[in-house]
Amino acid sequence: MAPAETDPKATAPKAPTSKAAASKATARSKTGRTRNPERTREDILRVATAEFADKGLSGARIDEIAAKTATTKRMLYYYFGDKEGLYRAVLANAYQEIRYEEAQVDIEHLDPEDAIRAVAEITFDHHEAHPDFIRLVSIENTHRGENLAAIEGMAQTQQPAIETLERILVRGRELGLFRADVSSLDVHILISSYCVFRIANRYTFGTLFDWDPAAPEHRAHLRTMLGDVVLSYLRSRPGRV
Figure 1 (tube, rainbow, N blue to C red):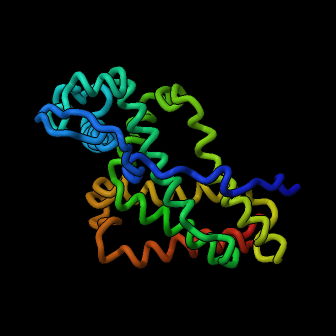
Figure 2 (cartoon, rainbow, N blue to C red):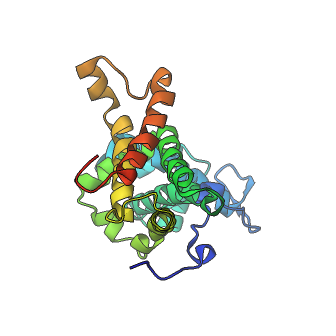
């Protein structure tokens, strides 16, 4: 049964902090210069993302994060409460960025096959450009997702990704292009696992097989292969690929 229609604009992800418009209010930095609070928050998140991705939740230090920003440790606590609050804000912003990128794909004006390929390629491009996101996801999995679960409304903010895929699949089935037994979550898992593996396992895979999956010379081939794999699965008959 097709899902109830939803207004894409109502569920569209907002721009992540790094892309948000600056607030008009201002504050003083530790250098004494007038600063924009929103930009100060962005600066903290940018530095904290790199620190947590590199050292994990337990290894990252608030003192080091504050020292690399244009603000003070006191202001960092003001914005985020404590280290765990900052880590959760980093996680939320990282996931918001990929959802924002996905929302830029104009799927309504693409045929279903091109739309699926576009979503797959935007995920491929995002994960390649944001290796810290992949590291953060790996780190959070060592914590069994406890910090993600503590972020209010986090699961709901991820639903647009599934809703987008569902709309594409429904159109594809109606046109007789896609098999009927594949869910939007199935496709999301397939795309995500491919893109995450390429970045997360770059060094171990390269060491074992002397072939770097993230090397520039392999990029075009692997990017095209991702779309081919997803579409081949969607076009196949159940039990046959």
